[in-house]
Length: 341
Image (cartoon, rainbow, N blue to C red; front, side, top):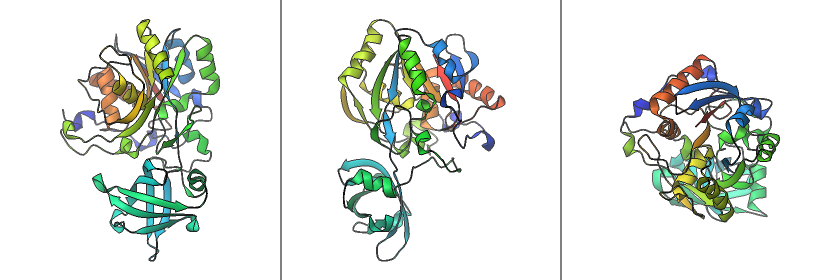
């Protein structure tokens, strides 16, 4: 399977640079896998496609201000850290720019000295393990000196940082938002629950590996990033009840898909636990745990695009993307949504 099979030409003007004023007024492209039909709606209309007994699975991770701009101690050389994964309370795996300045033992200063860091190890792909030094509570210091790590294709400033959080975000740890969930409002979720639709929360902390381009022509040679996840007993009971009663499990976002498919047995039942997943889903994969998917429009040649093609079929997805571009849908993180069932 070749990388070029997942490429499509996207005009820059279709990349959404800011969120809509109201979350649930995004457009919704509905893909019916049974008859390969397309329907053009508004996201709030998702209610018409869900039914009593369905289980929506949402990712409750919350984006932290994971981007740090500082300087090297002693030389003043500029440095950028992006926090990827917490190892211990004060120890993180980070991406650095420029990385060559960060040898083991190098020290860096952020926020006029409110936060300092020392490189203690170099790991896969040139990432570093760093230990932070500060006074007080790390999360509070990070809120003071950190910056929200918006994706590189968003070049405009975000006035309200909460618009890069889902309304149900509550577990700190992500370097990027699970953007399919950005379309939900609290009011819409309450309406769905009142109509008998169950909602189960999982946690998967999104790393920047999500945006890492696939660089090998044979996609089977791609090395997938790991992300930390957690799945509670209560969530499993809700999800498994839908499966056992022949109702649908609908993942909100590819991150929820990765948790469910990692935790599912051959009958599609999920088990509680926490750990890391590096599951790579591409066409040919047999889904065990989901019957539907709410997702955004993804970058060409990305692993997320491959996952969607695996679920809906490559040709059908490419047809849908072509029509979305012709109708001027908004793409990527702050863009419009798809519902595939």
